[in-house]
Length: 177
Ligand SMILES: [Zn+2]
Ligand SMILES: [Zn+2]
Ligand SMILES: [Zn+2]
Image 1 (cartoon, rainbow, N blue to C red):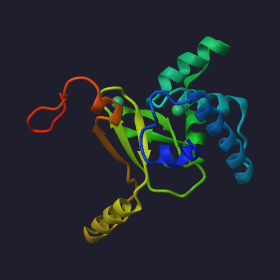
Image 2: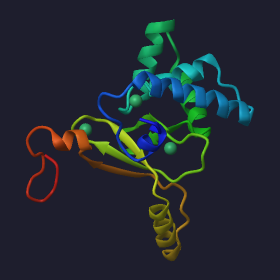
Image 3: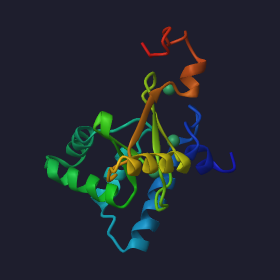
């Protein structure tokens, strides 16, 4: 694979991809972004980012809290929430509203529209970035006289790996069972 970011930006990574390099890449990019923005990626913030990137599945604050407590002893929940807030503010992770969990951003440091694809079979989440969709929503909202403040789009379905494996998981209406 020559351009992995392109692949990630366009959907789900291969199930057998080298995930350690996704994590390394995410951490390296975070260091560069924080330097550029002159904000501090403290060891704790870095550890929380790494925890969010531990897989392509959503990670909840509580999971991170448990992880940190196991590693460093009792950790106060606000410590984790503040670190997550920092990572959100600096565009390093996205919040998945429907799951109350987080996923690493695959285009950190770039101003981008994002939509999240959530696989209901394997639980992985992929980020796509469709500016046209974003514009259409902004237009529709403005026609309705609505001031748009958050434009999270979360789509549930089956990733290509799950779609191709196992029995059909759709019923007649196209709804997932
Ligand atoms: Zn990966
Ligand atoms: Zn993103
Ligand atoms: Zn899947």
